[in-house]
Length: 604
Ligand code: GTP
Image (cartoon, rainbow, N blue to C red; front, side, top):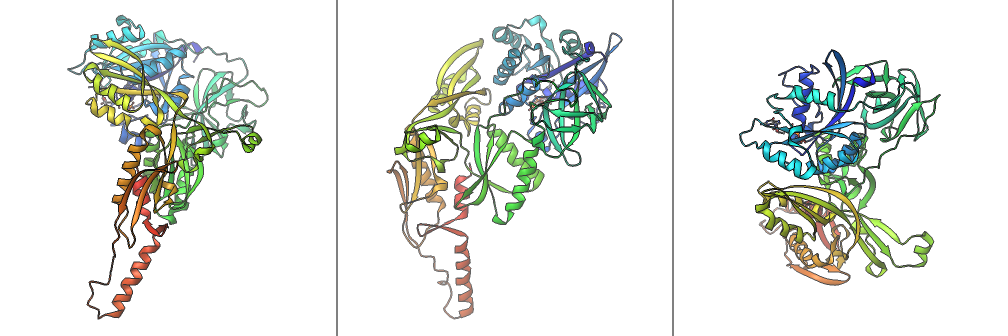
């Protein structure tokens, strides 16, 4: 079809506002999938997405629709809704000309609605506001329209009201996409230039690339080259996603398609790369910021014998998730493992869940950490290295305090939307998490939007859960990266009979050291079994003891319950006890069961 009959769009919404349901209805309405076949949420392909009801990997579908006698191709780019995946949202939006801003008519505008609106607005996209779930008894469209006017200056008359669940208003959505969104501004007569905006690994065909054609056209058999890697490939397959793959011979400007060209390694399919026909080179399109890892955690096999299996599983999973960074890591207690970087905590959870579900691998995940920036005092060495700045995300390598000039921690700008009855406890929570309030605005008569500067390490673990529980689930939260800030950070060591145990060290803000130290020694006292010798558990900062607990000695005489007689039985028991000791790690003459580390490092 001509360029004028193509529309590329995304649906952006807060979690659970009905994005996947609407996508299904659009596909059903246009006949791309059959109605009532139980094929619900066809775009959420992965099992974890189904279970968690969230969209992780952006998927696309081309919809064909006839309007006023002309066929239109509407390319729906599905975007993940969760804050951890905002880089994927941004990436998907850069191939769109417009978005559907979907808002639950009962819940109203939420934190992610705000974040997503500004992403789309910042890219100059046409925005079609749509209220969903108008079938709900509690739906209050007037109120939500008022919020849209207050926050985004959207007029009530421009807002569509639909029920994705019941299929009400779907036709209007499709016709507005055609009437309101501009077609892509592209030229099919220029040389082929396309943006690689997503890629994944296919067992049989190698890396597949999802491309948006910005100019020209290409066909199966053409030789194409990458602006980034300079490598050349022959196009083997081209298909449109409707949403099933639909083979085509040629792909033209304005269109979105899946390209297979025998790339054996996903690393060759660099997201943000530009592809051109080898014989007519073109310059690169503006690429993307590589996704930035915000949260790091160690990952180790639960049994040392499963090391190879775990390595293979991690390799396979990272093939499909280029946002995960992988480094080798070792721990005296847990053996060989890896240190992985994630976009956020949910990303980490999804990754480990996929590891278990798709690869049957059990792994130990250590407590997550963020990346800190440390400025060292000038020495011969820092001069030699040309910088005194180091970035660390593993407490085990935090430098000695005498070497440190300054410590900085990563910050985020957090947005919270809440009914004002929860304002008190929420502000208190933010304060406990060392937050600094930046803004508070009323978005209607009884709802408020708050903005806080917050340290990332204070929100990665359980901030969202705490926020939900103190607001009975009504407050929503989203955040964006906000750089580093000078902060007083210390490394807390855990000592067992004066010997430091590196796996157990953590980085904490000095104002919280006392509290955290107390909690840690109490937890260890619970976990470490009593032994023949007395054990002192201490938490120290810069050599100063902040907390201490004692574990009293206890003799475990396994033979006591025997009546002396049977020597072989006695020998057997002693042998068993010796074998049990092998599973222990010796720290300062104290045997600490491997499980202690595992239980301690695991987040509860
Ligand atoms: P994420 O993928 O997690 O961002 O969620 P989503 O926005 O795709 O939401 P989804 O489509 O999964 O819908 C969330 C819930 O809302 C589901 O239980 C849907 O059945 C329900 N829902 C969606 N649309 C409607 C609607 O129009 N009316 C009612 N009553 N419920 C709806």
